Each structure stands twice: as C-alpha cells, then as structure tokens.
Length: 166
Image (cartoon, rainbow, N blue to C red; front, side, top):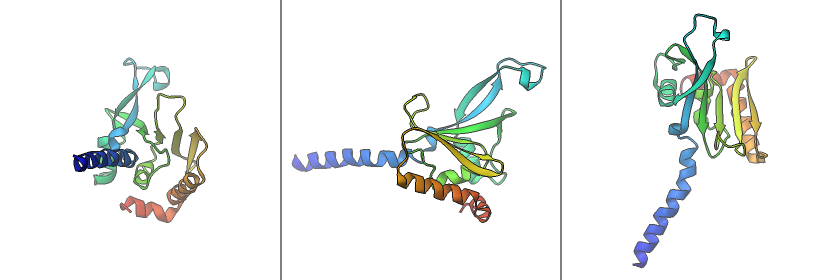
C-alpha cells in the first residue's frame, strides 16, 4: 500500500513538473490570425469592414520547419497577420526563432483574454526585430535570455544558420 501511494504521488508530482515545460513549446496552444472581410465588397480593403479570424497554427508551424517551399503566408487568399501562442513563460524559446524569422509577428501570453496576463510581442520593424512587453516586471534572467534571443535574430550571420534549421 505504501509503495502504491509513493508511486501515485510521484506520478502526480511529475505531471505537475513537466506541464510548464511542455506548455512553453506547445504548438497546440498557438493560433494564426487572419483578417477577413465581414461582407464581400467590390470596394477597396480600406473601405471593407474586417474581422479577425483565429485558426489552429499547426499547419503554419509545420510549414516553417518542414516545408521545402517555405512557410504558409496566407489562408484562402488572406495574409496571416500574426501568430499567437499561450505560454506560461512569455520569453520566446529557441524553437520560436525560426517562426519569428517568417516576419509574421509573434505574440506570447499566459492568457490573451485576461488583462492581468503578460503579453510579449516580437516583430520586425525597419529591418530589425524588436519586442514590446506589457506585464509584471521581467526577472534579470528573463531579460538576459530575451536579449540573447533578439541578438541572435538580428545578427545577419545567424539568419542563414536559422534558415538551415540551426
């Protein structure tokens, strides 16, 4: 009985310890954002009301890592405007670098529907990858990791390495 209780407790604790690690790279918690016209209209896009549509990002992410033709850039003729991922930690991972290199903005949050959740956005502006952040103060360690990732993204030599899967 004592052995079974220890085994059950160990399995239960291991499940809690591995969940955040898995959530930080979990593509199942990502969506792509596509703007679609509310109604079909012959007028210019600027005159047409648009609504954001959210789709699972798996196909897009697989195209980034496994496609010979490059990443998917549109859905039904409409450009992908952003990638949004729910994560426990909003600092981009090494895995995210190749996604960011598509130049489609990446947004990371613990909960996009909560005003109390942190939000990290990374996008390319004027040829340089930058971030915006709203939320609790980032730790020194998180700021160091963020700086390393941005430096890696912005180094020209690293682009070729990342594009080759490095």
